[in-house]
Image (cartoon, rainbow, N blue to C red):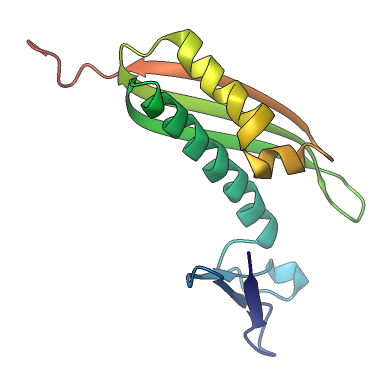
Length: 147
């Protein structure tokens, strides 16, 4: 995996990253650190990446189990150390999984498999942060007959 990050110049603290797969993303700092608040902070992207990684796993595991999953949102709340380096010290993942007749045991299993085996990002972050998770299931009856 590769990535190139380029500072956008002396007028602030904006950076553009180009990923190895050819995608671009922008980062910026807070105004009190010389940034202009034009894009997400690098630590926000790190947290977002962990959310995307585990959501991907959960959806894939449920689909492979032939469950009728129709949506998966993950809300993350993180705490950081007060002193530099301000690493994440705790992260809570809350999953909202939507689908038709999703068994609670299948959703719980998918989340546990992600956090214990497949999600490289959350497993790596667990080295410095206490990781917790919760979930809720919303039965998607929008397509049900008579609905």
